[in-house]
Image 1 (spheres, rainbow, N blue to C red):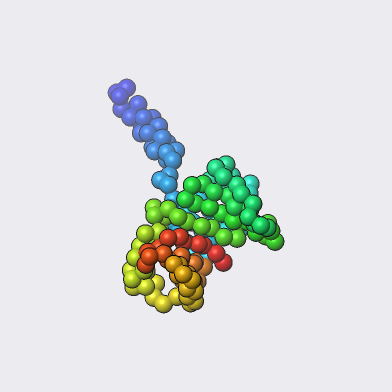
Image 2 (cartoon, helix red, strand yellow):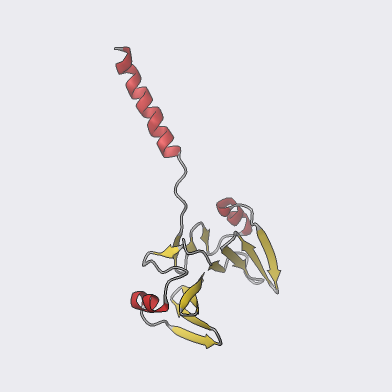
Length: 147
């Protein structure tokens, strides 16, 4: 009889522990919105709360860049919040599986023709709605999330 009474208590305890477990690392890129835990429009305080203290903070001209390895957020001089997210980590990808390291032909097959293409020696820039892809050697080298 006692074991029957303990069973619901143990079940509730185990269920609570399962719900308290940390969520798997979010690596979804949503063009025009976010890359994993970093979202456009976040303040420096919100970045710290979401991602943690930046491993590297740099001032490049009027912009401030917060970096966590292969994920970085830029806050421009005229913006109070994140206005650009840069992803160099192949673990981050869009719902269509566009990620760093993907071949240009695969990108074109998935996303189609870009809204705008810019070519400089060694680099091609493809602009899509809310996202820019930097291509080097026919491979995605960086994904930038923007408005």
